[in-house]
Length: 305
Image 1 (cartoon, helix red, strand yellow):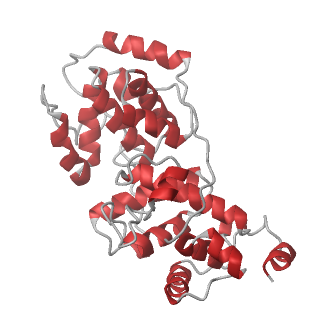
Image 2 (spheres, rainbow, N blue to C red):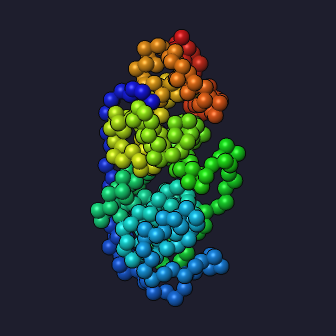
């Protein structure tokens, strides 16, 4: 991406509901010494009495349900990091069924105790929840996520890329962007690499330049969920600005709104034209699918021809 306008976007103030505070106060009273984990018992493994949470990050990638199983117990014991990480698994359906209410509730509990990343995610999910998952309230195993067929476009992705793609898809749905379009942008921008940095200092999965990161209040451009949230919010702004036209939205994401407005169309830069072609090969619709009935052909022609 080249230039971006600096229009401010106000943040959402997260609030913790009374029910969540009651749940928070009651966590210390949950029975922790049940002899066995119930539910999904054939697959459940014994939880070590003192599992260091940092060691579970690798297990999240290999078997997120087993990681969730251990996070549940640690969350019941009041571990803020476990509450946050379990919330992430529920938010994006990793190992456990996607559950926005459970995720928001876990983020709220951890945020109320000062966990900053949980506070950030509570704002990202843009949802209030006051129902903790059963495995945090009692010694039961969490349900397992349903097996979802992998789309053909993602078959060649690594496990890390598939996890990032899952995060992109979920956040896109929350912010009214077609997941396939958001994934197309991310694939062309960074190949889903969270550590990607361009010669023009565009960074992270969605390749945000500093001005865009500031505009959409992204504090850590190398944090996948923050970066993706910022990029998707920007896509939503562009989709509204250009009435769902994929060629103009893609061009603006690459070259900036000012450039597209100045040329009243895709600018004649070879880099931008190649970029738009790459996006359209991955996402063929001319108009953003969720907005096809929102913008009439007459409105598009009136503004851009």
